[in-house]
Image (cartoon, rainbow, N blue to C red):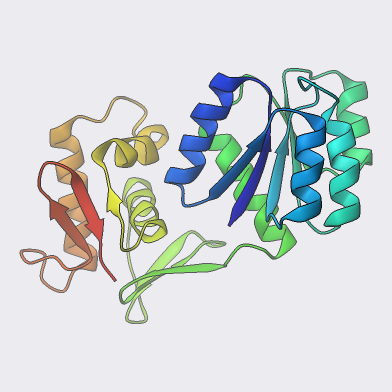
Length: 223
């Protein structure tokens, strides 16, 4: 999945690009209207996040160009401006959503996933070995049998499935479950959550194949 981020605040670009990449998205960014328009005309993206006010030009102009180049691509406006005029104008131009800054990270990610599902761009299922995750229903099955997962366990499983075959750091896991835990997740607590998840998805939890420990670095999601 490729995301176009059009934003002129360098700090937001760095933070949001890093977050999106940890979620498995490829990110291209632009801070100026002209640069963004060239990108949408020359490259294919699955979704776009557009700030209204740019270093040069506006996100509205980028939205108009994107509607011409990729009519089905979902566009989400991301801006500090939450006035009714800007909201209505953005939606009337074909944006599917409008998120005001400062935004909650997990809410933004949820809105991106929802926009991709509505556009048909996002897969409806993910798999981690014999475990299949139904994204629409937020449920999981192993070898056809339903898994009884807590909200925390489901988010951990989703985090691993989205990064199958790649290193998953403990910081990335903490970020994935932060909202559900409601507080800082300690190392000991994270160990407990992973042990419980392994007990439900591994054939042999004492010799895991789906969630493999990489000492000193984190974990690797198996296939």
